[in-house]
Length: 164
Image 1 (spheres, rainbow, N blue to C red):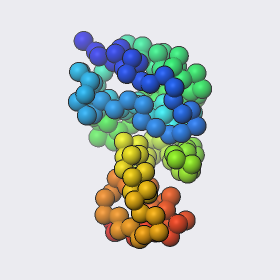
Image 2: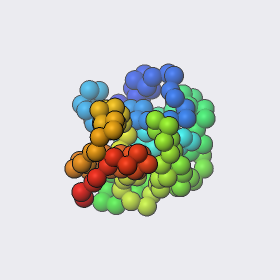
Image 3: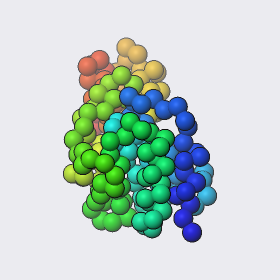
Image 4: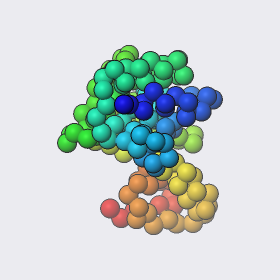
């Protein structure tokens, strides 16, 4: 039995359409049967990431529901993270692989399908906001790899020193 059909009820109805955001995070084990699913809005792309396989029927039904929730969507893509290379399939709409997304008023160029990760971890959005708020006029030593995009947004403020 697939729990993918339950996801639309957990997605808030008023999304910030122009902002990149995680619209569903099952990895926190808060939703029964959905610990293997994340869904990101990378305008105009919905990226569904599966860490375990799901049936094609359940995925198609979820995609249809997501298109109703986000009519601005031009592409729904599915990443199979349970497979070694984490391949991405286009399951609805256009094949969009290069895009510029916005988060908190800053732009990021990302590529879909070239690597396992886009480089921008949307589940760390609150962490980036917190660090930015706490570090006004301070220098920041970034030792946490999930905050790498902080470097991009704060280089213009000249406050980040990163060690990778």
